[in-house]
Image (cartoon, rainbow, N blue to C red; front, side):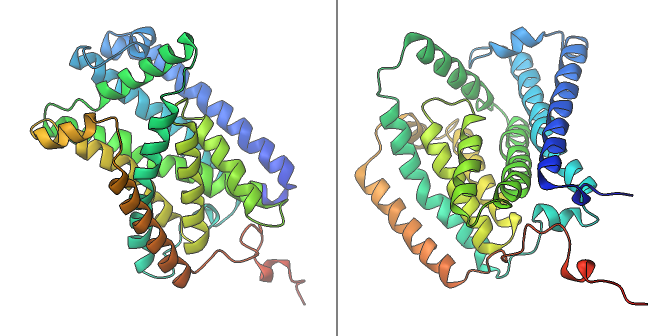
Length: 311
């Protein structure tokens, strides 16, 4: 079998994007073709859900969301890594962390930056955007509120899997596992690749108020991957970011104080200051315990594979 690694990196990149387009087409076809048959709902109905929509419609929408996430991010990244090299797990970054403490620091880094991201998104939401942009944002928020309305523990488990676990794994495979690797190949350092992948990561979320916050989150996730050398650490941080929102939303169903906290649009100064302190402390400890990706981490071939064979 001739792996993709044998081709120039630009050709590999073209193959990767062709795979993305193919998988997106397959996912869209399956949704359009079988969604009405399986759920009695059309794709148009799915796109207009809100927190007042029937539970059956919300269930259909969240399943569609999960399927599209799998076909757009997870499947292309994993299939490409499988076709690119005989070591797909290593290619995509699925190595054990260099030190166990890095798993904890990945979580505390994300925990610390979250209040800052919340503050930034709140400030941007105060900007007087056009009515069309406001309507688009309102529709997006209504859909997310529908997803986070979880009347039972079973609904919580389903939402946690589709909203937290699936994107954490799929998006890390895609952005940090494959795209960051491609971006690093022609670059002399990590600055440009990290910024580029964070921009693409932000744009794909189609959250106008959250573009800057998601960009910063993308930078932090790339930093975690680079300093630990393990995609598992960035997956865990991403999962914590997504999962905490799902958990708090579920807790707010029967807890008035949590519900009040989530509904409060203002971010207290002490909350942001405490988050920054946690982030800075975690970043310092991560630097002290870093096991970064080696300089040759984007090489397609191992050094011994490039050595000439002797008879």
